[in-house]
Image 1: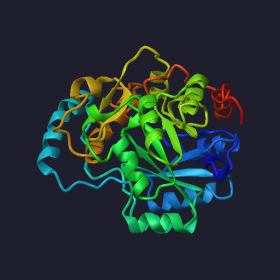
Image 2 (image 1 turned 30 degrees about the horizontal axis):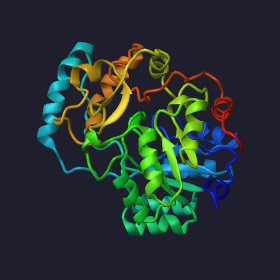
Image 3 (image 1 turned 30 degrees about the vertical axis):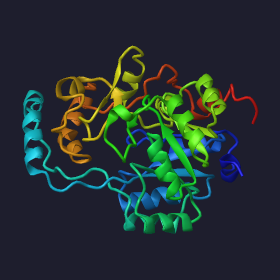
Image 4 (image 1 turned 180 degrees about the vertical axis):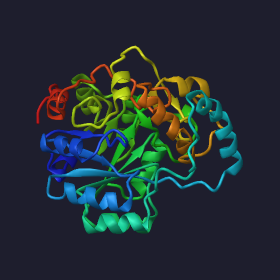
Length: 344
């Protein structure tokens, strides 16, 4: 049985879960239109996760996404240096630095799994690897289809050995956080179509292509290269159902603004539109506190700048190809992306 038939999808298009830029509204709009909506859960509290799972129950298949990072040990010296680097920006804007430096993302754990078991979604996906075997077994016992992201062939083979149902191959063009977990060497990362070909030729599982897929031609090409489906994120960021902030929407419409991979905003490499923080603090700096500790230090700067309609300290996540970001309903954007699919 193909992945589409197993999930009951009319279209082989998944909406990428995008933390900070969406909630259930976008996910359910995509699902209602025949694709697979995605809901980011890595930044939700347990109570918020419970409410989100209740809200999507019986609304059709939705992919609920979790992070599988390990929170780093305390890093007081690195955090102190980080705060010192940020002090001139706080002084410039006339604001106080944040009082908390704790993690802003929670990895999948037993407490999250227990909430998930009460209202299991049709699909559960993981970023940065997989949870421990016992937790993964509990997720599969719920009946959920399990997906996870690979950024190299080695990661795809690792995921196949551990029993995922399908693999999302994330090419170098993708916006947001890189999903790598076996190696932090960014030189190993490949463009989407090249990585897709490698993985399709070497694994027996369904493969989903992600990264830079933002128009009907790219969707059709990925399917012709052996992907059973594609995952699209950036192309949905300007849809009215998304919660993308105003400064982010404006940046997405600046078609000539470059993107880069940076660790400035969270401590982990992610692709976004270049802004002041990336230019003056990065884009990549090994001394920035590890993921997700770096994020809290920028919170007040981001809020203050955005209140002045400035994108200077905001993570403007976006893939390399954003020419097709359109301010149209999610259903319209989804159906447009599917225009060149030969037969469904």
